[in-house]
Image 1 (cartoon, rainbow, N blue to C red):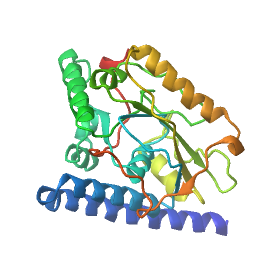
Image 2: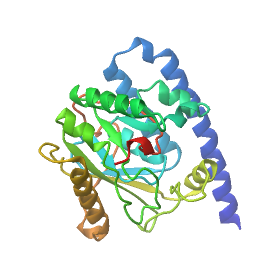
Image 3: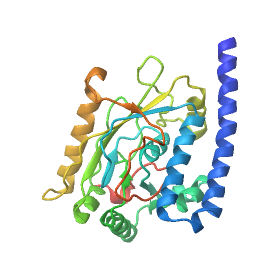
Image 4: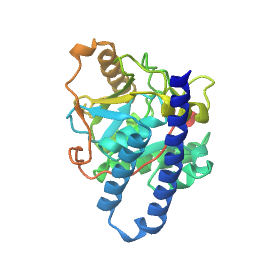
Length: 283
């Protein structure tokens, strides 16, 4: 009983700090972003994401594979965005609905998020063009091709449409495996934003968890030339799914992530909480 009471108090304290951290992020975007270079904006976003994980009590481990081109990751939680951004800041592709979320929507809209309008072919074509432009500029763009979240036990099928952007831009695709573990090293359900779980319930579960660790394993970049998008999506899916299925001892060596040791990118872009590609872009 005492242990549960302590966990509840700790969660409440963490969430209070998250509220302050969110306010700090909005103030930074509103009053600092307009006057600094893109490089500094990315550094600020990376620091803010890393500090958010720290505030929630989430440790972060990653391997040393460089992220480049189009990042395609499995999707478990809204926390995934900040895990990737803490390693290397990226522009995320999000459904247009997120733009209208209180606070978060404003923050996303002002930090380089690429929004996809639902059910509009013209909007879908424009979104692809925007992604291609970012990739050709050397920016890092991240997608969640499952199109929804899972509990992390498996990788759901990938939609292929957004992979076309990497093909058109002539940029590689970097497969990324995301996992969350508890104090015993077993898969944790705390961050899972799936089924009937609400955002508030998910955030509370994360804040209440003890010893939650996020793992980011980037696999070698895959060339996107001379292949169609469906085959590319299937190939990247196989790579991530087979890596997830391996025993823990057979996975890549990971190191703790901090700002001093964070990976550097070619010249990436920006941030966002993102549920995945829209139905209008699904293959």
